Length: 367
Image (tube, rainbow, N blue to C red; front, side, top):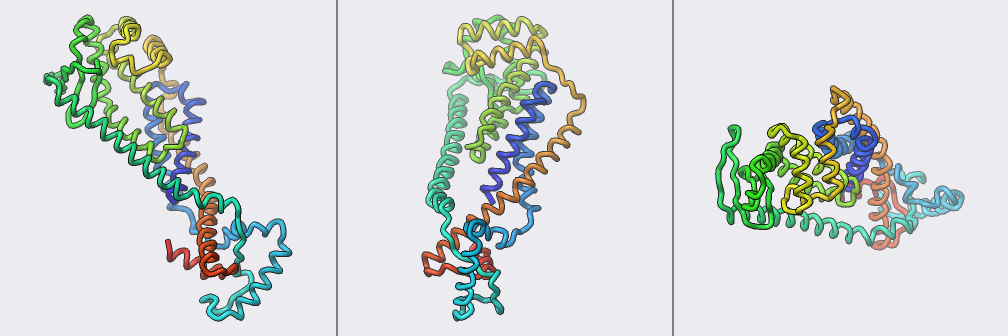
């Protein structure tokens, strides 16, 4: 079921992000866009669970056609084989636990080249995902350790701003201006920032405070953990980039609201980019900076006043899409698991015919 969950969540994220790119991005403000993307992640993770819970327990017969590839192209020969095997089975002692064995309850093992090509890869893929997940968590831990080292090496100044205590880290390292939120609210502040005017320093400070107020550190940690599930989901990387850009939009807007000078703030971003000095802009490319300045000079208003009815409609659409996709995925997964079990029985005993009912009970007992 884990594989079905990952496929369904990736499929729903693709559908939801396509709606966002095609329409919502044009009619939502940055704040509403961020609400939608948060909701999309939640829907992409929760809806597949609801779909899996509500799925019926498919019976073994539903997968019979997948296990017997000759059903469609040579049914006459298959019927002859079934009749022959049935005559052998009814005369075989302890063939199955059923009181009355019927011919239509008999299943033949037929080699499936597609499934056979997948089976050897399954183990490799599992280890790949396990090692990748461990690497992601280790990288995340190493980044947190790096931030803690910055705290330890810095001269800490506590500053009360609008009723909230911030810990200013005077740090003479690679970072020029940054912020992160662990146990406390930290703002990295390099001595070279004194070269800027007092108003520019205030703008940078407000920008970093916005990131802290919006809990962008926790969001970044959550998004990085999500990569474990969506490692092969291309939407994940676009969604991550979009959320980072929206965080900058919101932080820029907060800083402008505080200093009250939109044009000078945009000019400051350009100046910092030209000198490639401060972390406020060096972590973004030219295209991102262009988008930020465009948003500063011409803010995007929300053209939809109440987004929640729209969100309900989109979530319903995603649920229906996921439910319709889950049925064939579930049947295919079940067919593959059953084929693996039948193949193992064939290799172990040499038998090529089995009772469906008893085999289904054995597979359920193994699960």
